[in-house]
Amino acid sequence: MRIAVIDLGIGNLRSVRQALHAVAPNAQIDITDQASIIDDADRIVLPGQGAIGTWFKSLHEKSLELAVKKALTEKPVLGVCVGMQAMFSHSDEHGGQAGFDLFEGQVRHFSNFHDDSKQKLKIPQMGWNQVQQTQPHALWHGIDDQSHFYFVHSYCANLAQNANQEVVQGEADYGHHFIAAVGRDNIFAVQFHPEKSHNDGLRLLKNFTLWNPTHREH
Image 1 (cartoon, one colour):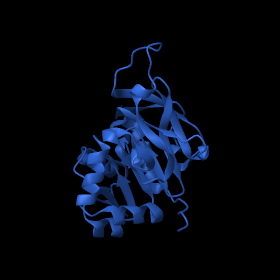
Image 2: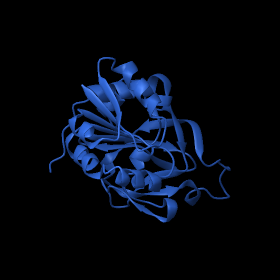
Image 3: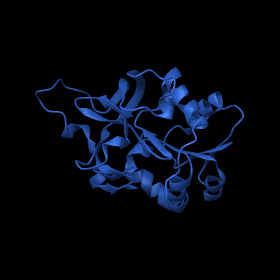
Image 4: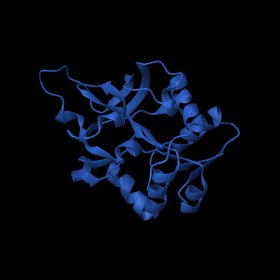
């Protein structure tokens, strides 16, 4: 099995590779910005930290749009943090950034949802938070509902009003409910960092390496 961790120059990708190696020691794990390696991989991890505008700019500069979009239709893909936010229709960050539009919804700053009547919450959310599993999924196998995962983010994803709610796989609360995990067919994505989330995060990564999803029709 060959797993490609896509390198857009953002985030600590070595910790992602180390976590994957811990759960799949016989897999070949490549941190890569080469389209040919992405094309040849069996599974894709699409991570990211920082600003989504910089993330998409790097994707463009490295000429990886086609390879990533192809993988999103054909292979098991795990999105992490900004890698999850990029799958939504649009992000408000940096004046607005169009996403892959795989899930109908908007990524907005937490300040849009926090008001003076609520407890003052620090932004970014940085630390452990519980995740409610909204429906069964192979990547939740062996992980208790309401388990804690590690988050670092100032923006959160929310579905459009008329969107298919069944794509939401997990929710968390930080002043309001927001999407902690989303997925359908061959795609699963999380706002938290499984590589920083101890045993439950490792279990989710292990589940990803064993997952045999239904591919999207295209």
